[in-house]
Length: 172
Image 1 (spheres, rainbow, N blue to C red):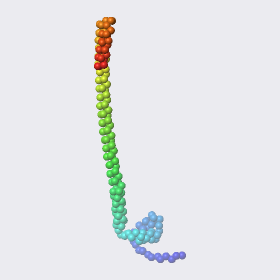
Image 2: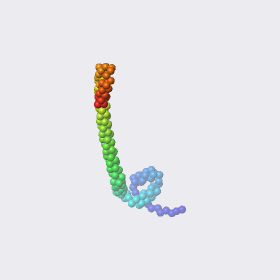
Image 3: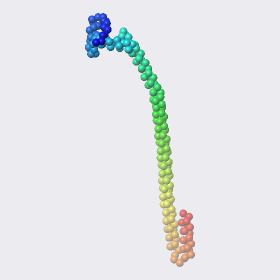
């Protein structure tokens, strides 16, 4: 059997009630709870009289500063360059869309202008064709009328008449 050193600690009866409740809620004997408390305060170097626990506050503040520094470093290394790159990409996309729209609009204007010019040429050509037909019919009718007036036996005059009208048609 091991021999334990047994020392006595005196404290008020009211405190003993609280001590017993804490031990029971943790499932420990009062002796084991006392040993654990002493070990806890010895290892953590916490001051049991300091309810606010300045050491814990300092540790939390230090961790908070480290965490904040990490976030700022990530912001400078990753987030700000990413945002700048995305802004440049968005501006480039806007420029591409603007350039594309300008090119399409200019191409459409050119196509419409060419279509109008072609339409005008076709219309003019059709009008010229109609005028040419009218002139040709006028020449033909004049030829027919002149030939009938010559009679049947004047061959030389008929040849001259045919040559005259051939020249008129060539000059159209």
